[in-house]
Image 1 (spheres, rainbow, N blue to C red):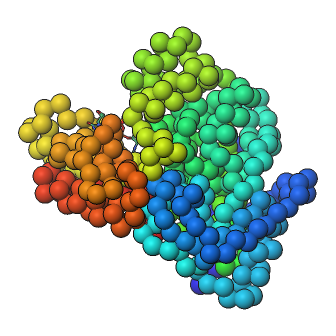
Image 2: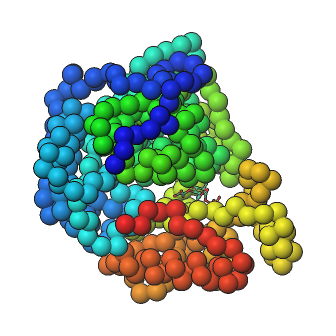
Image 3: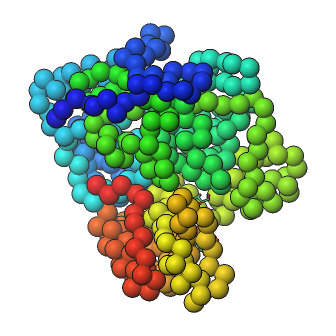
Length: 372
Ligand code: EPU
């Protein structure tokens, strides 16, 4: 495999924080005890939010860059084969055993790296639990992440699919991403503006897929309150609670999520299984003519985003199941493991839903979840 090309950030106008391609990243590890742990033939059941059974040949847990580098040097020298990264396992469906090595970041450090008036730069290790990070922001009076409360997953996974909810996306606050190139074993930093962020998309799902490990993310946050209440249900819920404080916004988001989304600790799921399709205006008009009241949202290039959950519900799938795999009864965008489902059970339900929506509406919906 060739070295990573110069698609990495070379110039950038974003102010504050590290914005340029760099092979010198701060060695935060100096202050902590480094740790790398290798686990062989390990069950993945407790490591994926769908709770499906699968085994990985090897999992390598590392808590800093030095440990990762140490392991990868051996891995390369011994030609140990396939490598992939497993964060919280919240956006993955295993359809079989994983033959190879899964790299699992466990570092948990969060630190302010710079302050510039109202702007505060924060670096978080890839292994930090996402909601712990959002809670840390709340405790420190920092605005920007609050609408993304309670999204399951890790900091390192946030840029990969540009997590989003309630009118906010991770890209709004990501300043840069630290990573390690799996081919050259060199660290690099890529600025947010060069991460190719789109709707549930980034360069990490495209050109850099399988070629890097994200080791930390730098965020740009604000001390000045910046409530984003454009999502009507959020505005209403916050108003019920009082002032639009960080705490009230987080509570409101949690309440809305709890009402619609299953808790993976109770019912296996990976959040939205599908992406909302973006279609031509004419297609949206054709469907709306048949279904007055169809929800839709403007998207880029004059196109229209139609909620996949609505299409799936109208196709009659909400609350229905095939064996141990089901379409969640309160949000049709979510597929659930009703207990003991295999990855194949869930993908076969997904395929049926996709085919049915296509037959009924002439729109193809795509999986958002990574299917392995
Ligand atoms: N809808 C239905 N039936 C359903 C689900 C939704 O008719 O079963 C309709 C709703 O009535 C509403 C519209 O679809 O009019 C949108 O629903 P919702 O606000 O719940 O949002 P969504 O488009 O279904 C997206 C994200 C969620 C995120 C919410 C809130 C994607 C793929 N999903 O869902 O993200 O929480 O918006 O911002 O974009 C996730 O990525 O895992 C996730 C849960």
